[in-house]
Image (tube, rainbow, N blue to C red; front, side, top):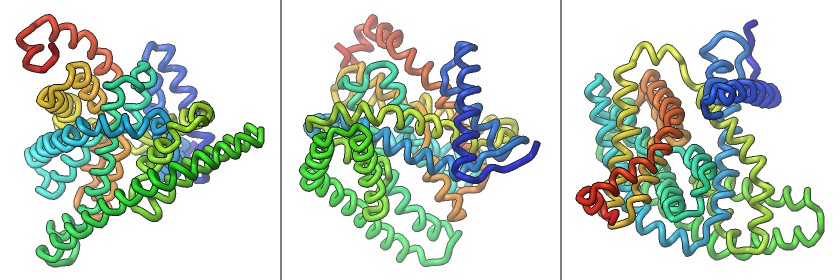
Amino acid sequence: MEGHAGSLTATIAIALGAAFVCGLIARRLGLPSIIGYLVAGIVIGPFTPGIAADPNVALELAEVGVALLMFGVGLHFSVRDLISVYRVAVPGAVGQIAAASLLGTIVGLVFGFDLAASLVLGLAVSVGSTVVLLRTLTKRATLGTEPGRVAVGWLIVEDVFTVVALVLLPTLAVVAGVTSGSEPSAAGQGLIDVGVALAKAGLLTALMLVVGARVLPWLLTTVEGEGSRELFTLAVLAASLGVAFAATAIFDVSLALGGFLAGAVLSESRVSEKAAKDIVPLSDVFGVLFFVSVGMLLDPEILLERPFEIVALLAVVVLGKSIAALAIVAALRRPLEIGLTVGAGLAQVGEFSFIVATEARGLGILPSDGLQLVVAVSLLSITLNPAVFAGVTPLRRRIEARPRIARALRAG
């Protein structure tokens, strides 16, 4: 039966039904549920025969999941904790993004992409998926530990970097000659746009810390006093998604960053634990939709047409990013466990990579097969990520058993 289900209701029904069936099969086979969700996306995607859900609708639903998930993470972070991890996260994320972008660009050039497309490939694989990281840290009960907080802070810095990258893409398109304009003026405008984007992100953060930190706790505390559970849950949803939407619509930053800031300003209020408990079921459901939407974007033929490119980019993501993160954390003289946890957490790509690659595709910088490469690498890296995390403890023990290596990595 051929068909296309483009409505919101149909997309949710098909996506969740397929995710349930494939997730259950994956569990019965002893595999992570995530693999089942990804396979479900491929099955109901537009590139395979049968009933196809609308990938655009699924991606929008997934964005809601990202915002809710980041709101929940923000609830577990105090501003003091955030400042402390940024001492590692900011230089670490900048250095790791630079290293991964360079490696990805080299891979693109080697396999015949032009310089602009290769730069986009490098940028796309340099940033990790917040959803994947948070689900893994939560499952391993390490979200509240120092390595977990550093890893999350690292991803938040990458989120801000994604905003800057998106601002620069139109300028790159002009310089590359795929759109009209003059190179000098485009470069100058690009710098101005980056400054404006960073100023907006800074203004949003300041407003949330000064105004939001007073208004949101007061609002939820007042609603809690009404004694209605459903009204309190509604208030939590309205606060998280409302701030996330305003962050995107007014300040041009991502839903994820807006959701995180909303949670962070509520973290030290007395209603934070209750708000976190109410948001978990919803973020779990929308998180599943995220993984299904990843699978829906993949054309399975790319796995047969460009296997060497996929393996090379996958090596950049799984090995290159992890090694770069471990080396940077070691250079900053932080414990080995932090370096290994961050390295494992970054050994995947997801939603931010799609945003960069899709925008570049729309501007004519990245060809369609380049976008498919990013999606394929994302699917494979997400599938491998549980195994990468499982290797953290054995690897740490092996390193600690070799004093010379341990000292070099500041693990002693």
